[in-house]
Image 1 (cartoon, rainbow, N blue to C red):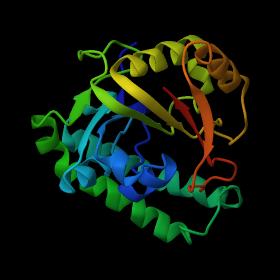
Image 2 (cartoon, helix red, strand yellow):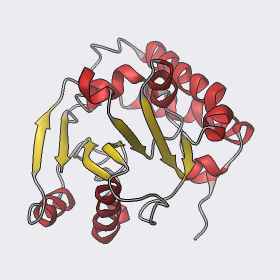
Image 3 (cartoon, helix red, strand yellow):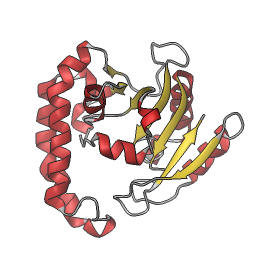
Image 4 (spheres, one colour):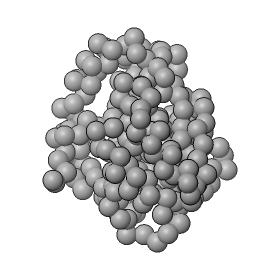
Length: 224
């Protein structure tokens, strides 16, 4: 089935959030980093501006800047209405209220949009959809990141996750996945099964992070 932009709800996070979610140290940031499912995050732009090497992969990068901007505009109100209805499920410490949340997300997505065309030309934004093979050699990156995608969407199924993570591990020496709960911030059998599978051949560990916005989503999975 062809990937459709109207099935996507774009929501961008910034470099500070990435560093907290994935516990990215100063030395980590100097490594070759790949982001899978980065969408309209500003992490790539901000990291590049600071002289770091980040490559982002996402199916939405097949669309134009204008198409992505239009989709953000269409979904913005709906997302914020949903947030308003579910405020009790979130931790309002770093982000104090809905207005601050919206401003932070829109700021991140504006930075992404302003950078998108140049980033595509520089091959920092690459159209790719997991679990398809990436046209890159083994160990092209030191660290691979998945933010709010893998393990969260349990409906994608066990096979999808095994194949996707396996491909990430082919091109990355280490991968970090955040969070390790589903969309309702609940622990899942899927996560347990994925950990069990990769435990056989890789070093697998769960790490507490310094980031928690949705209650219960404060742990990261590391496989290397």
